[in-house]
Length: 168
Image (cartoon, rainbow, N blue to C red; front, side, top):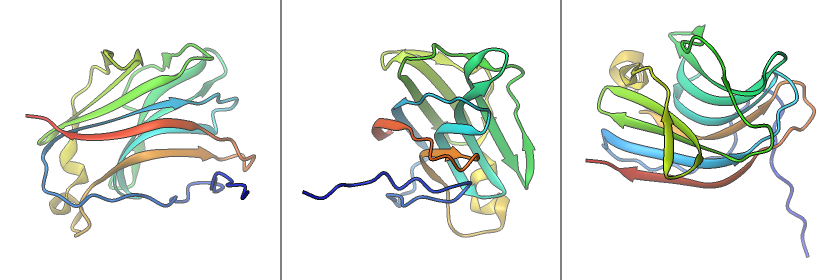
């Protein structure tokens, strides 16, 4: 029997991914993740990505004051921000469902403890920053799951599934 080891890479390095090439403008992607961060340098969640200078990252992490929490990282032309005004406190030992929904130029994020009961993050994000036209590129946008351990300690996350579906 072979032992398969999770391919955790140290730092912000891209992991292998599955790619679907399509022209969908109305989609939702979702996942379920079990993650137990112990530092603000532990992150896991959903990423909506054009390149290293233009992406959104719905991330589970850790805050010294509130513990396990959720927030959004935005990179827009290389400028880092966290547009949600405060961290969303999460139950420490529960699995979290995460969802990103694209409605042409609007991106919304959702979270919950049950895949049928979603809490919307109350910001309509600009999905156009993930476009070829905005970025002067040609790759198109990606969505996926990721985990980062910036302490180089091998922190892992367990993703239950990844779902991609068109919405109308």
